Image (cartoon, rainbow, N blue to C red; front, side, top):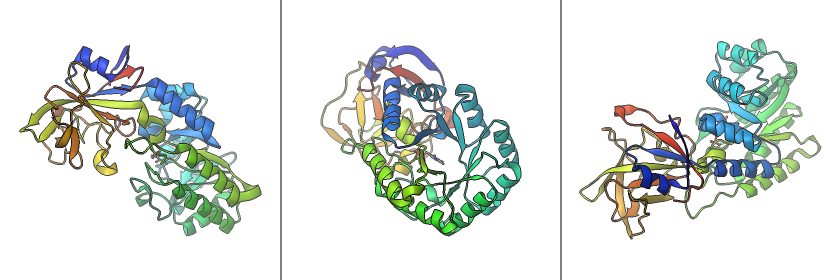
Length: 381
Ligand SMILES: *Cc1c(COP(=O)(O)O)cnc(C)c1O
């Protein structure tokens, strides 16, 4: 993916000057760094970044410049990326299933924090990772709602198993910690409350004083115009409930947002290839491109239609069905979407808040997906 060196005022200035044929992802470093500072100022513990949500170098560099000093990594490629860009940063290898060669690679690269959710993977770590000074974080899950997508379907031990694992971690001489992920785009602060109280029960049941509690990612981004994410309320609740639950044994807190840090720093502009018979809008980007997650996490309504002259269409809306460019019939965005009734071929449809799980999931299926990036001062179209 090429990064244009020009800094544009905003997306409409770029569209007016370039009239793009292919999707363009606009990034605002100012928004990214401001979001990072919002987490660093507000979260009562260490803020790390879940690299998988957007591993573009320019993202990692801006987060580091804003003061992020820790990264959740899930693979050797992500470990090498962080080692190269931020050699001093802490790396938390929080993919709970790893091959032996991946573990060896992590040890060689100085990783001293690993998460685990099963007895078999824990025994592998005990065998391959030197215990002294190394943290093993037991990941657990609860059946709670509140998120757009259930992460617990794949990872996380039950409370009962987590208790056994935590005990084993401590007995084997590792630094014992706990972690969970409430599910991505979790707008209900009480999801964290349930998890933190369960962490207290696990530590108590195992008779282990945990060093750290990693409260995961899941922090929401701004997806619906009527629903601003309430990050500060979530931070305050995490702080209060941790104090109430652990008292004098309060662990240090860690968070590892992906979406919450990067999503709102990006807007994607998708050229309209055709408006078929006034009802179907065909975009040059779709679910095989940077809009991959919309059918999973739900449609957003922070949309704008910009003409090739860079003018925002303000006419009354009507419902359209939106398709992506490939010949696959699942390449359709969810639901009926309200767009200005005079949307036309050659316009761009802009989706705000798409910085997470968009560059990484972009495929070249059917020869589409020629996504480029442009830097803007402001994302206000
Ligand atoms: C993906 C992931 C995250 C980031 O999740 P978001 O919902 O994007 O904040 C954090 N931690 C782990 C272990 C993950 O796998």
